[in-house]
Image (tube, rainbow over all chains, first blue to last red; front, side, top):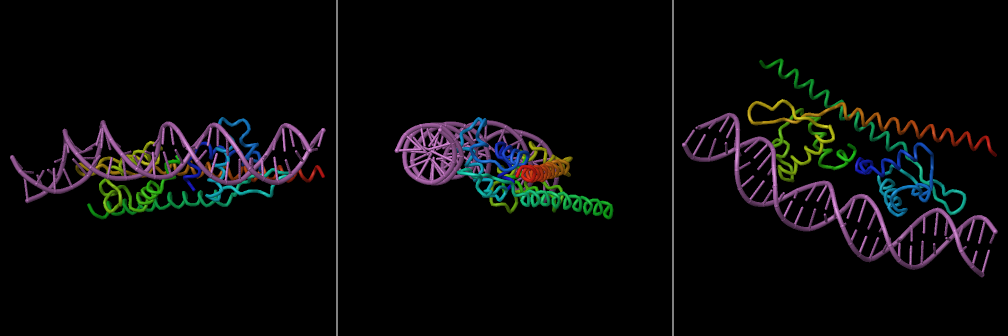
Length: 101
Length: 101
DNA sequence: TAGATACGCAACCGGGAGGTTGCACATGGC
DNA sequence: GCCATGTGCAACCTCCCGGTTGCGTATCTA
């Protein structure tokens, strides 16, 4: 999942979906420097990581993509836990150094 | 930076440095399935992303690596902001739908 | 001093990720 | 019915990433 967010293009896609709400593939590809199929592939990767979902297809032939915010929360929590463990490890090291001169 | 965390091996390295405190390259490579140089490359990538720092070299020829927790906080905050923007976007959409029947 | 250990640098290699092109299919507006 | 539009599938290409190997250099220990 971090791998999915790791690509510059995909991170931009996530940010754009967040700012503008659900959008279709063609809409997302419009104005981009790369082809529509490339965008579609990136969206597939994001969907595979559970970061994005196909919303109920728009009015006609459109199929919109929308964010799955729960996955973002999971990632955030993972980083939090890592930070906390680091603090604990440093504390243990400090104590060990103090006790054994 | 998400790209740095995106690799399985690198994420494991970060987790291990968090759990056990500062470690040398050779120590991190010990027991791993891949060569020491591969580990060293991954550590370089992590250092390039600012996620890891060379601690004050150990007792002798050792040079330990340690976590830079501020970068982890940055990443966490970025995800938070994205989630928040998503909520706002949905709220705007809801209002727009309600006002225009 | 000799040997083991920890490290760095550089060249090399294979596979997959990111991208394009081409085509087929459905749907909506005229 | 006809054309524009939104989408999906598949083949193909290029380049970079992850990994290995080989060698040279410090530093600790016997």
